[in-house]
Length: 308
Ligand code: FDA
Image 1: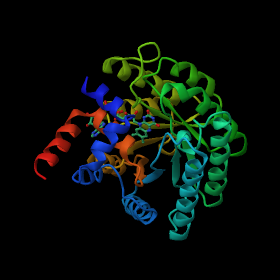
Image 2: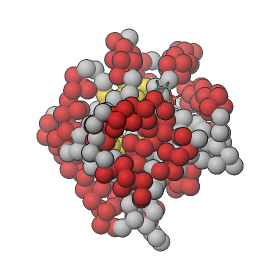
Image 3: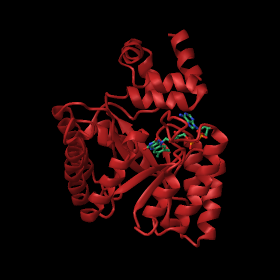
Image 4: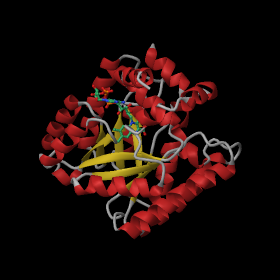
């Protein structure tokens, strides 16, 4: 119930104004977001890499409805990639893109516009030793985002897609990618979806996630197991061993500021751990999804409000 309300609020202009106008929000946001500027993102990358973790960096923003905004997102990524290269932190880094921030929802040719922008980012990323992963947004965008991944991989084979285990269609999508060798990030799914397309109960999502990890481990894909759930991390580790995958043939991923203790413990055990590092001023949608995932985060936010 609370999570549905927060998910709805993540798309509401009125709720956005209300949350953004509370000065204390910024302090809570800082727990999940690495800062507002490119130097902040580069600094966070340097720190994470020094601790043995890898990164995928997200220039915050989504649901852009004009061409100027979509170009600004593209330029944000190009500036970031150049800064990473100048800092010597680019090699092995990844950037995560939301196609809705690159113009996917523009009327008419939006899908093409977003792929063209993503292609420019892929070219700049490859030139400095980085890879690109296409984030997955709500279910209405899945078909176009998977198609964008397939198109981009023709020229940039390292381009990754994200699949969401809460969606009923995902086993079919894994089967379609199984022989492609693509980088695939598997997540439980952060968007509130209707029962016609998605599992509604956490138990069912968890069962689906475990099943999907198993399918990915058996495929030729490079599995990126993105979860903070220790049970799933353990299951993935066992499934990787059962499929005779070496430690380099798959990776774990977690979000910036979440289960940092587990992130570092897993690195110490010799696992590959990549941290999703969001930065920028357009943090509202990302922040609300993190609140929706975990009621304790809402309590933390309310306590900060009470003590301001
Ligand atoms: P689950 O929700 O079961 O949580 C397990 C445990 O993790 C909790 O008990 C708690 O300890 C911790 N935890 C989880 N969420 C937390 C939070 N918000 N704050 C504090 N602790 C938390 N989704 C999507 O739809 N499209 C996408 O492209 C992506 N991309 C993405 C990248 C990466 C690297 C990650 C880790 C996740 C995503 N997600 C995503 C989000 C994903 O779909 C999912 O909503 C979250 O990862 C939460 O689910 P868990 O698998 O962590 O398990």
